Length: 128
Length: 179
Image (cartoon, helix red, strand yellow):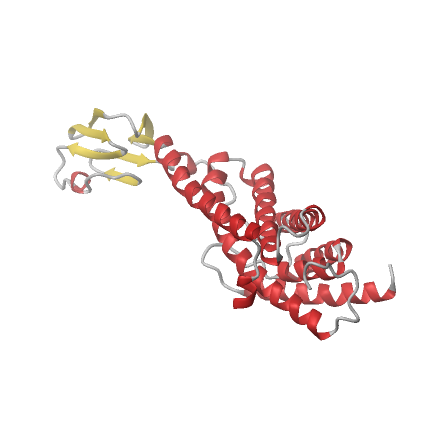
């Protein structure tokens, strides 16, 4: 095995280095591209009310049965800043960059990213 | 095609089939992560016996394995066939046009790379159709493919050297760069 590794040609090693650096760079690039393309989807009473880009800072007030709920988007993250329901669960959840924040009393659902995955019942993975 | 060639193709296909089947039984953390062990046999066949043998072995392996595993003509079969063909053609062309540039390990890397490129493009055109999903997944697949490609290349190289040591007289079409 050692002999095999020693006998690899220069092109072999360069190809390996090139592929590894390309894929590592690609992983980071894809992650960046993904986080910029994400959307915040706010559903009120089960219906989509707002679709906002995650990378644009914004303060938004959504009305519900318990009065206005203040949703804040900043730096690729979203949080519920203020609400007037009893448990304040959504406020305590804090800043979220992916996933869902739910405020049941206000019938409010805030989804980050995979919002359109719910409609697509496509193939998850294929083994070959 | 001579009788000896058929005999050889049959034995190599059997080995490749066994590795392919064994590999499909292994549990993997991610569904599309595979070691590509069958590529070892393809590479050995290509280096020792030439392009036509390697192509036959790959085709026989892909078709029979899909029948045994139960994915014949399904999505996995399309991906498997496309990947296998792309990899054998890429490795064959590299041997033909860059004979002494790449060693066995380099050839294995090329095979793994084109296998993954073909599978990703096929998956995109037929099944996923969301370019962002493919773009996120491809670097990960390329990285894993390079690592398994290196390991398979080292195994193939050892195998080829041992086969050459054992019966040099019987082997035909051996490329000079190996010895």
